[in-house]
Length: 286
Image (cartoon, rainbow, N blue to C red; front, side, top):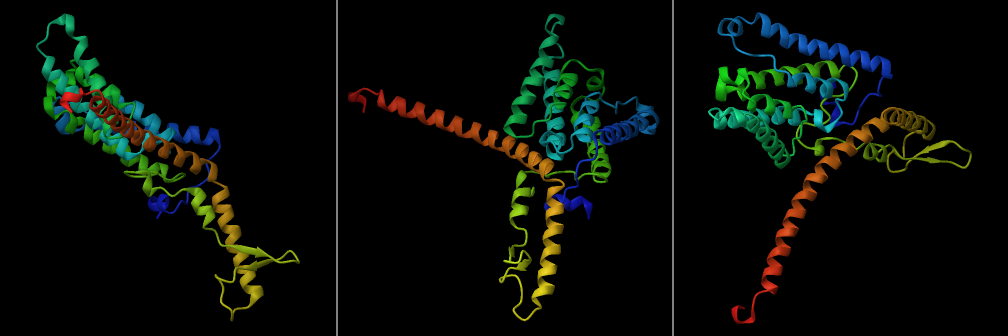
């Protein structure tokens, strides 16, 4: 199944720029059109004058359909990022909804800052979610109508539609998602290449099968041809997409390692402060 190809490292080569740009535009139009149609013709939405289409999903469409291999475009980042941002925005709105006019700028700014803070703690950065936080915190009319339900409606269903469409259309030419929760699920293409069948070269220049991978009773010529074909298929599979897959894997790993490094730096700073406090303690208190 194409939807699980990212577990095996089987990623298709990137299409030409013109074709991919056209495909990204058409697929993003499809996703946004679905949301717009539901917003316009949904019976419950129309009867109760409820919001459905929200502007930040347009920014998410750029990541989901133009750069689907980016760590910022993976389902975990998209879904959790928007939910965290929406919750921070609603919280700031409810906290400051009776504030005087001169401070109306404050809840939106606080919502964005808190959203980025909690996205960092959970390692699920998604830049368009910052717009969700600002939209909710800056006395949005949509938030006024739905209140605390804003993260669950309309944010959650809209985001799920976007991710669902991305999973369908991106897997026609690429593999999406690259990973679900962590980069552990993503196979390093360098490791795939290292696991290719080992083939030794004879003195005459022909390929000879590895003694560990062939049966001693098998025909050497047939085994050699079989190993050569397997090796050629493996090389063609890896060579066509190694650059793109390697970049995606490295970006995901860098993103995860930065989060781990920040945690270690905070722990190290705390340890130094404790050590400094103990060394500076007077002798009569020691």
